[in-house]
Image (cartoon, rainbow, N blue to C red):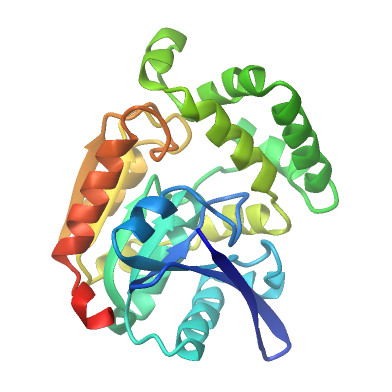
Length: 292
């Protein structure tokens, strides 16, 4: 897939973004530790006639951290990016820690959102100071340290890919080792290696943790676009409380609980189920011919 990466400069700030494919536009808010080089789920979308616009969210990649002073400010800048690209309406996909951004965006700018898809997404406050993951993140993913963290993970992933996969996969799944192995395939090791090579936290992950506190019930209740919520029943990273919360509060929403191995629903033997459900939903909300 050919990926074009650009920078949009506005009011002294920068939004880095990538564009892939030709067709009906999908505006994708990537997950934590990611950026506009994200790859999970992209090939299926491009192969089915969609183009993807992925901004590096606030504090990630080349995007200014100041854009993330609040969820609302961030979303106001993302809509300026759409206006800059002359895109009147898009499908929005929000992944994992990008969930709050997608939710606030759909709430604030309903006229821009043809449909909303939440994939393994955060929908309420996440990682509080009492959580071990929160405490660890304040150390290993803080700016000026996170680069070392990811360089080490990438190095070990290149040298010992199978070992790193076995070590990291259980963090994303609630399944036992035997069940986890049954649901994975040979490509999963390579996908983890590639993931560790492209990920960085910048200022973004700590911004994500802060911004998850800003999501309110009103944000969810204000969403009027058709919404699909995809989440694995075996997600060990973001609990089922999040998709259930979104489904309860968003009108015209559909919750589809996947029987995949865990949080990364685009990886493993059951990833085809994710692809089929996503494309079926998008097709029902699309008018691809008008964009081709």
